[in-house]
Image 1 (cartoon, protein in one colour):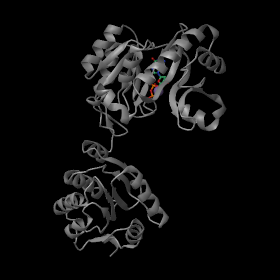
Image 2: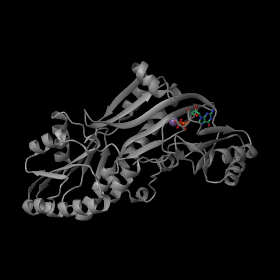
Image 3: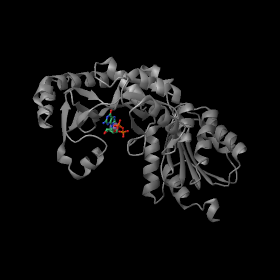
Image 4: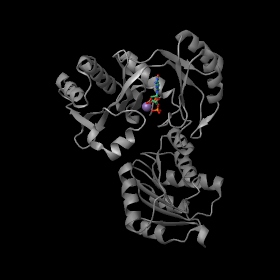
Length: 380
Ligand code: GDP
Ligand code: MN
């Protein structure tokens, strides 16, 4: 789950990472008030969950409360990359000497946290990564030893942070590491981390992503989840506890178990087909859940055929079959189905599903062959 900038900055404050003074505003009157409180030039920052807000017009520097009022009424309610702007973070403007990139992420190869930094942070960091990757430094953090001072110091030297800022940088790095661990983050990014004209380090932006699998340990964020940037089918899937990921093929897939779902996608590819999605209904799925899954799959206009692969163990094949029936009564589709079911109550399931648009089989290989070669409704 990706947190908003203002939420990430709340975590920064909790961990003694300096941020500009400021607060949220959701109306232009409020924006004016905050600007008055801050007494000086302020920056209006659209709280939308997307990269490159600055380039898309979501960041605006103004000199007076009147101007804050005026610009806020322009940005609020506007859409940036199709996401409506409902809140602005209004912060004191900072005099920037240098923009640094600094983050903690997970290195899946070494299975440890990695600190990533560059002297050339800011809005063009992607370009820096592409054209001059040598300007980006990575330092692994051993999870048993934790982040050591010397590692942060070496990093500071490497990206040429002025020596008098090494100590504050070391504290900041350790604080960010602690925040990263405490919130089970997969990313904690400060871009830019700025050196101000007054020679301080300030986190001007913040982006924290919390591992979805650890969200139950951080319930405060679950209630605040912002779904305005998500594909609606992903929101729907989460509501029913389904793992759904949209892909770009034409064969919709409904499978129980993540491993089996991946094997299913592999074999479809192997047989020359293209999966439209990954979807794991999980163990012991009820008919309701299966029906919801099927509604999501059939809601994708690219889906021309569907493969259902169920290995009945705790999940009962007949419950899945009932779910399919339930969804099909409601949806009325011409899309052909191939159903592979094996295990608990599969014979009963086959009986339930003996419809004209549905072919059944008990092996995955055969099912994959069938679905790849079957003619879709669109082409018959
Ligand atoms: P992003 O585009 O979504 O990453 O938004 P950021 O919060 O990183 O802001 C983008 C850019 O706006 C920064 O890299 C700065 O160059 C500029 N910016 C943001 N806040 C200030 C500020 O207080 N003063 C100045 N001078 N520039 C700012
Ligand atoms: Mn940024």
